[in-house]
Image 1 (cartoon, rainbow, N blue to C red):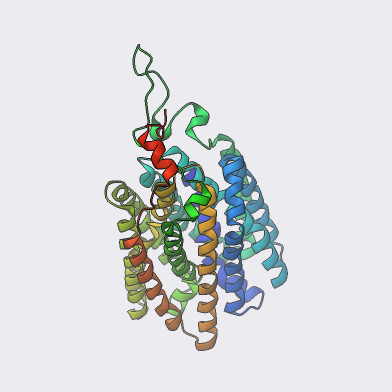
Image 2: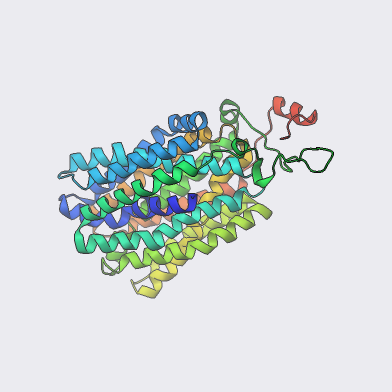
Length: 414
């Protein structure tokens, strides 16, 4: 269910933003800074509301927030198709569409997965996040085709209808935690092991920090900074991907094919890196992915616009895209399940501040120079910094309260 919903959300909103960029810019008579500002403010809105949304998910459950977010996001896209000027477009995209996706998809789905899995958390997060790649590979090109033939308003309306049609029934079947079904994480259950009636225990008990305890650790803020740098680079590239490819000489209709290739490439890599993160080190796997992201941008800068060169760039960037879920899984690894959504919301606030400026800066550079060269060069450094932070990221020290519980044998899950 998470994979399916993420495919729709990615195809229409996350990866899909780039195929709306140029048509909206032309239709509303905007500069690239103006269009970039709308997408950047949407990220900022998600960050400012992140802690509140996270608290709501922890309190009311992923199921409720997924339903609410899906309805708001779907209606937002329908309203977006009716906007006739920049002000109404900005208000609807930032105030409705963004609110729905950040409340119902980003936080709710990852919180549910974090509750259902401990030992297999990396693979589980990767399976669900593979929907993001599937959406970019399949849904985004379909929307691009609709936009090319019918206009961006038709694309927005169809996307909104699809999100409504999918999120309402799927949210009905979502269960926020295994305990609500008489089970434990990773498929362990509460049935007797034998005729004696003993109960099965989870083999990997979770250490659950409170939000306040987590916020006092340096690891939390270093992780937030690392994720913030990752998303700052990613946001600039994804929002401007089609414009960058057009700048490199590709036709606007052909450019989404390169986006699709990147997403197809990330699809199997998410499973590979998910498995590696479970058996090796999530921090190290994330670091390698960020290093590949930086190298991909160097390839893009050096390319002369030949299609094969852009395909090489897209495949290399797929490595960076494929570790995104692993970085979120680190929150659960470090701090447990109880306050995951609240802590994820805090990280969202940090990364939204990081990510707001990079698309606007890229748009401003192009408006001033008719080139993306000096917009892309800093992204290499951003990826390098993210790679370093993930590599050296330490696990937090367990609070004395939790250490005492573990020593006394009270920290396990019965």
